Image 1 (cartoon, rainbow, N blue to C red):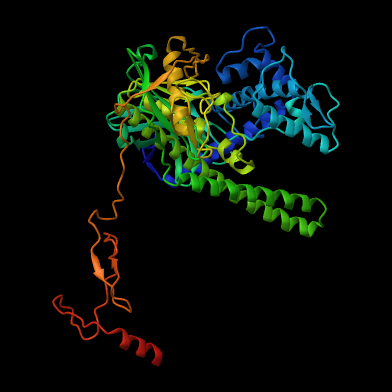
Image 2 (image 1 turned 90 degrees about the horizontal axis):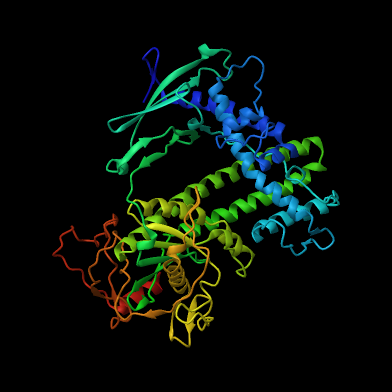
Length: 582
């Protein structure tokens, strides 16, 4: 519910959505204006140096750094915006520009090695900044497109402002960048109470048109038993259901000690599904595993994501083609084409929203399944592949694109969050050769059954390719648990790959995954009923009963509905004669 803080009157939720939309519109417009004004090479030079005009180090807070650099958004004449809303705008703009500062530096490094005639990059020297190969190919495509447009790449040092325009600013209000003069959050029982200033009109002219509104929302039931010690100010967005709060909370979890871990689960990112897991245990006789893994079942969400991705790409190609036609069309035809382009872009935005929602659901479902598997196995460590060095290749253009756009990063974040609640540490390990080398002898594996199979002739072990990769990843985290690198804001990482033989254990070590039965079908065996027809020697099973069956069989003619009445079986000759007569 929503209540006006001054008058105490109830405010309708539709009115709250409208006033929140006015606030987000002010933030988005001011942010777009500020980004367009700062979209120049000097801005990225300052961010890359990390120093202000006096040579002082820029603070980590975005709004403080923007205030020190003099970055202030401009509002239309006659509109009053509180200074705390300006903080929200500058914090969002500064974080976006800081993210693009790395891309600006990488573009400058790669353009000096780009050959416009061949469209390829020259080999890198040892003194250059290391750029991931996937990122380098994306920049190479941008440089090739610039060369095809006739703009050329004669400059020895291009900037990001030369290749692309300023980014869009999302309609998002990060209230954590402000203080109590804009928003306050309190907890009362099982409810969160947010008191925030909202405008009363689209263009507020003074302070009187900014009023306090008290919003109350219930804490979700799955968080009632969690040891949450503090709730932080949320980010406000608008979706189809109205105002959405994205809250962060501080929760006390058991501390995870990677050094003391003796059982590890390795998670391999698979091109066929999101991931697969396998178990390795460390004992007095060394490392052992039963070479039986577990494969994640995405419940068909991967097929839906592939369909939505194909649909989004089709909409993008069609809108791009219509833009090309609109350049040389008459004014009347151009207006019709622009209206069609607007419709296509709206559909593409809706498809993107569906994909984001499914990706988040898929990531947290995968995290819960892997965490449950690790808890059942008694594991203390979960090893995941390092995504910065992982790249999909040799699966075809379509499959490579689908794998590259999968929710792996979200799945890692969700897995680290879910596993921390049960005291399991998630560590990133090198990905190179995990599915190509044998865990026992460290020799190349053969593929007797195709891509998804793996077999070692020397050790006489094998199985699924993803399960073998999971064993290698779990082995690497157990061997490198004493050399874990920790950086603030990043996941613990093992950077050195070590080898030790993993022997095959005859005892069962990995847990048996649950096999959920479809609740709509009964478990009873089907009964055999006699076939009524030409050949009565064959029998067919009856259809499986379901609780969702609502269509009742029609009673035969002349039967009042009694279950004791038996119908006479017609002979095959009579049936054939009736068919001939018709």
